[in-house]
Amino acid sequence: MPKFLHIINPLAILLLFTVACQSSILTPPRLATATAQSQAQPTAPTEPLISLAPTPTAVLTPETSSGVTTAIQSTLTVWVNETSAEHEQALNTMMAEFSQQHDIDVELQLVSPMLLPELMQTAVVSPQFEIPDIVIHPIEQTMGWVAQGTLDLDLTNEIIDEIGRDTFDPDALDLMDVNGRTAAIPLHGYQQILIYRADWFAERNLAPPLTYTDMFTAAFNFFDREQFTSGFVVPTESNLVTTHQGFEHMAIANGCQLVNEQGEVLILDQACRDALNFYYDIIHNYSPTGVQTESSARTAYLAGRTGFIMLTPSILPQLAGLDSITRPTCAECTSNPAYLAENSGFITHITGDGPEAISANFGNITAMGITRGADRETAVAFAEYWFNEGYNTWLAVESERKVPMRWGTADQPRQFIDDWGIIPLDDSGTSLTDIYGPEIVTRLRDGIATSPRWGYRQGQGVLMSRLYESLTLSIVLQEMLSGYFNTNKTIFEANVRIIELIPNYAFEIEPTPTPEN
Image (cartoon, rainbow, N blue to C red; front, side, top):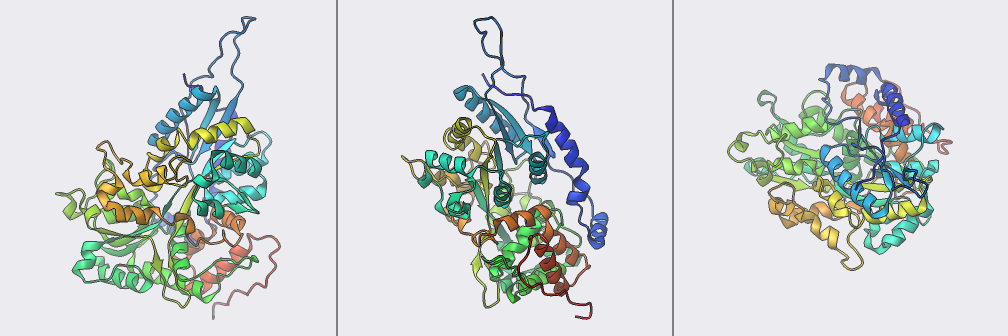
């Protein structure tokens, strides 16, 4: 029978502490941003801040020879950055199976991604709290935790070797390299995608939005304020990491790199200035008024009110009418719920227009971190279970954004990666391959770990952790769109705020221009 423990009381205290501190953590400091947010309609929460998996009381062992019944002492604490009911159900199934196999109790905590960095930081610095043994997290947090000494790199690499290092995506392992060791175990990933109305583009004889020029031309053609139709929608709200990610994707496509191997911040380079000007022009001129979120971008596209959007692959089942809650509402969708799936184009790589422009994708990876407090034998057993017996169960939940980073097993080297596109998305057994075809599936699947993300291959992953946790770029981008800064001032503000995240910055800091400049 399953062996779970109640979540211990200090975690409830930790949650209260974190929620109490949210205003200082998540609220941007600038007046213009606060004003813009106060005027916007509040975003309805789509998931709880923290969800504690339902767990019965501790399972007791049979009586000892003395007749005393004792609780099992071997436990494992696992934090997971997913909180949906579907993930909870899958995790409960996995934890029950693991517990039955290994006689280990599991404390399972489902943590909202927005709160995960703060919860971990509080657990690290507060003696009354304990860090988890295992933490599922995005790569943006990995290197910061390595720098803090939170992750156990020796144990992590022992586990990867035990599972089979050559069964993982080698580029994913390389992306997480720290002096020859892998910082965390790559779990799954996805590519950010630009989704466009292929039927609209064909009607207007427009080229697919593969480049800055094509994107701007299309946005201009589709924007119609009187018809409530926008050209392009991407998240712009200051408390969203997706705001940063949208800009980063556009910037790297223009050859903009944030930082070099020596640690010098490069955002004042012309490639970055041009990327910011493009970002501002297309959003300011051809996007809906007010701040945008993933939900508003998704809603606009499903309603047939925008030419193209940039989002995660989570929208793919919804385009096909497979989500009973979030359904397409475009005019053509009434008679054909799958109309948008059949009449959309999907782009993973975009290109800027400067001399350093490249065809760039934006890949994001989720990893399993093994912390310094984890018991070696228990952690090895758990990871081996997760990446073998439990892996298919995990990948099947919202599989559209879970391309496996473990490609297969020693006996079947491509078992997981080749099966990804045929995983059923709903009870009907429909898969991504059934809906979109093998070519699109291959495009979504390949090259996630080779994305030219800022900072990681330059050895500056710690800076990226600080940048994402502070939401520095998301904040300054919204301030710009709110009218607080022009683009020239914004690029200097971004430069100064990024440098503030780097202790003992060793390079000359270019002064912020005066208002006259």
